Amino acid sequence: LLRLADELRQALEQGDLRLHYQPQLDLRTGERLASEVLIRWPHPKLGFIPPLKFLPLAEQAGLMGSLTRWVLEQALAQCARWRAEGSAAAVSVNISPSNLLEGGFTALVKDQLALNSLPADALVLEITETSIITDFERAKAIIDELSKLGVVVSVDDFGTGFTSLAYLSSLAVRELKLDRTFTT
Image (cartoon, rainbow, N blue to C red; front, side):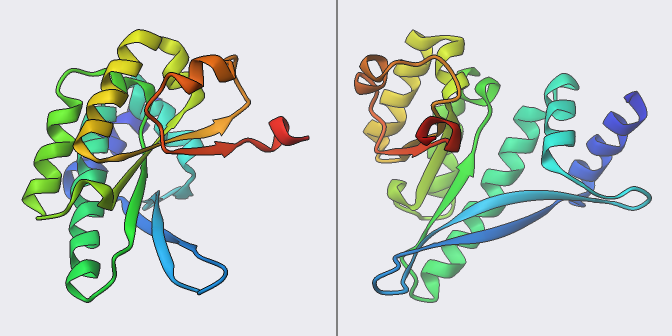
């Protein structure tokens, strides 16, 4: 496990991780509204390691901040290229609870948007319900900061945790993705 963490660190430093973009379309018009960023790790010996395996490893190894910074840099640079080509699509990036609650996260987002000359609504930050539960008051304050910037905050996988709709209604989120278990 330690060796794999070191290999992940090296892959991050050398730019060996890959981002894929899953389009989110308006079914009426076919217009691409956004693209969700999906991270992949093509390991030279083990093949593609799924995010569900290496993201917890990144969290345990203290790499999540660096990983998220890299994803934001790459995704927002790609979004800027698309916008230069005439597309108004946004990019949607998943962030972990540690990202949301770490000091300076809002500044990182603001700096990356400015660096790429993008409006704040070019970025959708997807947070899980568990991110909110971890430290509700702190999460609420950061979501408010991001929302005031104009960044779209989305709650992903709602219904898998214990957040009540009353809590949710006090958050400045603009999008809610219901988990399949919630709807069934």
